Image 1 (cartoon, rainbow, N blue to C red):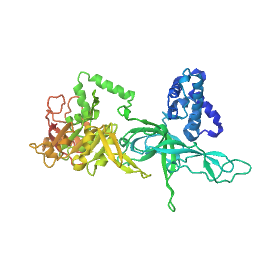
Image 2 (image 1 turned 90 degrees about the vertical axis):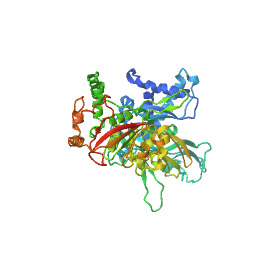
Image 3 (image 1 turned 45 degrees about the vertical axis):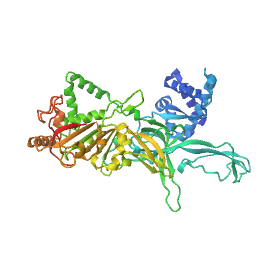
Image 4 (image 1 turned 60 degrees about the horizontal axis):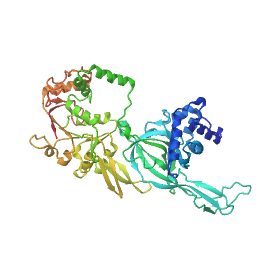
Length: 576
């Protein structure tokens, strides 16, 4: 580790000025030209009191000066103010040298925002649980889902006092290690003289108060990245200045910041508690990147080779992919195909008048116990990049949509539920019939309009629920084909109309098919994956192919549902 005290502060400022101003040895300007261009764009802006961000690529800074970048990551509270000072110096030069200097004005608040830190375990944390007390005071990057956003407050960060005895002026800054960043008035005069001033009376200098925007949010580990049995951890993120109001509940964010400790209010004869918070330096909402998936070159070649080999038999290639979906279940190919298409999703459309047509499809699986419904839902949540899996037993309207809670300061804040957290992904709801009737009504707007209108505790807002809902339910007793789906499931017709596809699975007593399923279970489902592209021989020969020749075929399943094991599915019907 480098000693940051071995270098004078003015040397840090000069190094950052060379980095921003493209004064690189050998004349290599590179991507740092964009920093100067960004500064010119900021200086042209009309608002002089607004806070602006200047994104600094950490990898480029490492390439420019490894020692400088390392000290910045290890001692950010000491180095970042010097970086801001260097930015002001570069701005002053641009005001004198630029061709557009007459249209530029000096901006007082330009903050360096660190992006793209090096991919090492000490900097890029995989989740909130990986943050330790040893990370206090250094730069880290962490991903998570916003579950709570507080109100935007005004924080007094700086105040200047004048001593009534010696007229010495000095500044007092807010202590961010204290709860809500309190600013403690001075108790003694800090003047440095041979004879110390012992005055305890001070007056506030007029116009010296500096206030900043302040907001606290809470992020939670992404549910799709947690192991079974793991409890999702959460962490408070402090946003300041131009970072406030960057995200809302349900957003996936990537936060770069400084880990800090914060003392809770002291109570007599009670042990004080310390919380770890992250003082954000940069926040990126990654919802727009939810559909992007980094494919390795090897995997890309495998896809290209697979489709090139089967370019004249696309349906058989499709059948091979369907057989690989949830391979522990035997058969159920049309159900798997429907779920795959729902996971892929469609394209939302907005017409000239501004009305939006959703692109996500909602699926409802109705089946007898033991048909693998829960297994299908778990697999859908597993393969989706962003998914929330819940069950209807004990689920409330607030748990599905959004709830209002009081934070540590006594103010009301909104905390996202399952549908909001699944925005841009899939929400799997098992035991759908167990949700209480008064709680099901909250799903109507969320499924059709894909928004949730909230009016709780004086908080009125609208949150996005642009997700695919895949639900599973049992029929009410034995399914009666003479009655409607609403009567058999006790689900109201308005809620059923929200589902674009309703799949009906019925248990059949077939000794031959039970033998097929037993073989599939005993072999662990490997035969379905290793089978060649034609229909696998382990399934009935007259109804396994998906080329569209038979759409009312019998299907089978493996007993891995947790509700029961073994059996068969008969007469898959699609009701709209």
